Image (tube, rainbow, N blue to C red):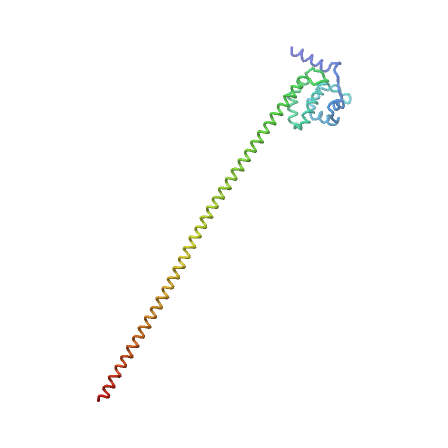
Amino acid sequence: MNESVNEEREKDRHGSHQRTYSLAQIAIKLDRPASTVRTWKDQYNEYVESTSIGKGRNKRYTGDAVRIFSLINEMKDRNEPHELIQQTLAQNVEQIVYTPDDEDRPPALMNEILDSYRNIVEVMKSQEDRIKELESYIKESNEQAKQREIEREQRATGTMNNLSQKLEQQQKYIDESLTKRDEMLMESLRLSQEAKREVAAAEENRLEEIKELHEQHANKGFLARLFGK
């Protein structure tokens, strides 16, 4: 049964009643330059070649080719990459080629394919938006974490600076105290030395006085003895 269906389809595709188009005519239907359509034909020839009739300059293309080029045209309008276009054609070209719809209007299956493609695009766009949101969230989280780290470092630096200042103040106090102590010790030594010198001078003066008194007393005794005679 499948073989008979395929044979009927082949008759529908290549029957004498089927309308055919040149690449230039397809370009006009798509409102594209003929050179663009020829480039597409070369790029996706494995999907287009089965829709051609004849060879060389007499080669023509069936309505299936128009539908294939229409799908390519729409995806190109959306700036879809070559790989996605090729994948879409690979998944749907047999359904497009074997659909015996009116060539002058988009067939129902074609609309289903385009709708499916649009849904895929929307899902991909939604995923891209979600990925961008996640990237933004991650970036914001990283920035917040970085800011917290900076704040921690600033607090740590502030604490170290405060501690350093306190240590410097303490060291200054110790140095000043030691300096003051040394000055007091030096002053005490100086006063002690002066006191010793004063005591020594006083003792020396006292000895001198005693010596003078002794000499005076000795002189008086000598005179007394002298005049007493």
